[in-house]
Image (tube, rainbow, N blue to C red; front, side, top):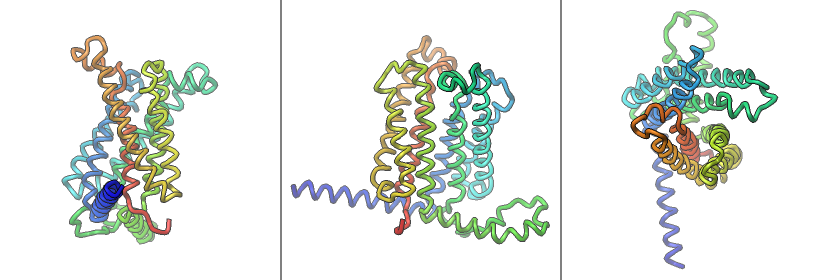
Length: 332
């Protein structure tokens, strides 16, 4: 019994040490580079998913090219932001915001696409399954959100810990106007407060909520994708439908409960991360098992199981783990 108690204390000290180290890295700005790279990878995965989904739709509308272009832009910008402070502060938030807007616009077009199918929203289950994936554009916007958070984080060895927002606004001739000039002090003050909250870990609620919402979208995508396959592998294909709602409830509940955010949220997030990795393996195996296998890589990748879809659930799990590790004010 004594040895077990000592082992538990040792594990607890190790976990507390790792949490303190990660929190310190976030506060001191060492995390911005890593999160910018994570945003780039998330953009690459979601952009790849969108690319062959829109290929199936024959790129019937010109707007279907925009997520491909923006995904490539955010991937390149995120990687470059890891090495260049100016890109991280100026270009990364702009590209990330465009990705977020494009995700919302894509969601509107997908909703309209379902409404235009025979029966429209009067036959929601069939048309959501057979029509354009309604929540996929919002999942695409997740990489833009990560990029925005990375751009607001302080960078290590940054001489300007709180760079005024006014210095980041491009000089496009609008600063001469009295309205904008009068609004700049307030805009700068609010920007400083926002950045301070991000660096101090007070943004935990927001990230936990986004982890829950993105898990809900990912679970819905998995539901009608696996339904099309007839749940051929029942237990494996049902796992994201069980884990995603748990992460949704836990992430939303962590907005109000500190204990939930520090106990249950990391466990469910780790499960989502692992389930996404396992799903990626089985989807890759499914692509290889299609007729032709590696001899027809492009065709099987497009018409086989979506390779990057399980990684989006892993991204939700990553956000949940990040929220669990962020410091939270003691009074909440």
